[in-house]
Length: 258
Ligand code: NAP
View (cartoon, rainbow, N blue to C red):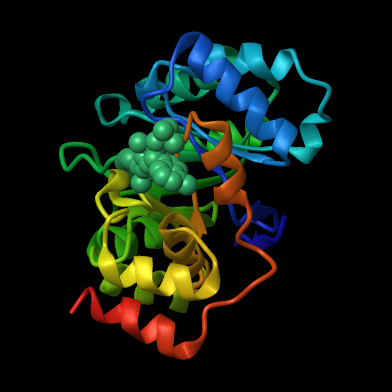
């Protein structure tokens, strides 16, 4: 799996497993199958109510912790200093691990100064509970503020991004500042899977629509975290490394967002 450098000095694998809506046994099975297929990156959050299941799955597999990249998130109701600190600890505890690789502010909350949350995140890093920190669903203005007030590098902004549903201003700002953008809902929660143009590109290249969308995002410089509980889809979503979309195909997909 290819990695992308983070401002923190660590690296993040380009493809990860999204786990929103995966719970209990289904979640454990999907995580175990993903790891067996070669996934090394798992995306979760306090809000997903599946961190204990993921922790159980991780305990049951023979994979070195240092070979894994785990992202967790602090919910927008817990952004006050004490609440954020506690939720960071809870996330790590529920995942039954010693640290997470990336802790994110899940959504901005205007009623709490971002500096206050980031102070708790800094303490979490200093305590060894998180390697890198970042944000999610932040606009350009919110990114400007977060980067300006944080003493620890903001490494990632995780945002919704898929063919035809872009946030070009945020992507451009982040790329210029070396903040990695992770695309969530990269398949637009299945909505793009019947798109005729993506299907045509896919059939020319012998690839599925999901693979075309993920490859487009990766070639634009993003990390992707498609969610799947199907073994076939998990395998398909990981097979996006040793082939390329040409400039013409990239342009055609770009045009979906215009
Ligand atoms: P998504 O990944 O765009 O789409 C998931 C859907 O696509 C599932 O129904 C899945 O069904 C299907 N699918 C996956 N691979 C497929 C394939 N190769 N072919 C056909 N269908 C496929 O949507 P998402 O779950 O919203 O986003 C992904 C992850 O991003 C989440 O799980 C979560 O970790 C993260 N996220 C973060 C935020 C945030 O605010 N930071 C918000 C939303 C999501 P099967 O299970 O049947 O494969």
